[in-house]
Length: 58
Image (cartoon, rainbow, N blue to C red; front, side, top):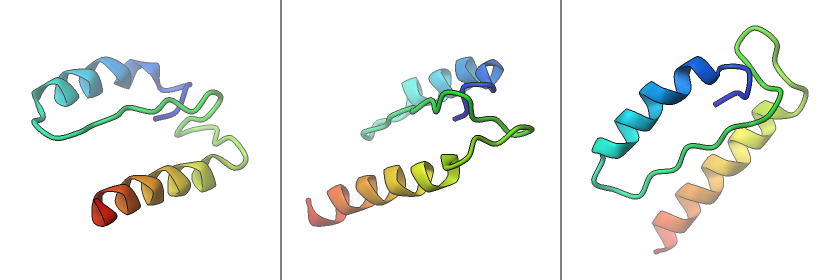
């Protein structure tokens, strides 16, 4: 999630607490829905790729 969207942090933390699988919330400083940080989308894609690779390869 974006560091400028910290209002969404609490609901995301509550949802994460209810999951039974490995879960992580990553905050990208300076990123937000209304003012995207350059490179933030690339960072999100890299983080997602890392998670998928870890789980598929086991």
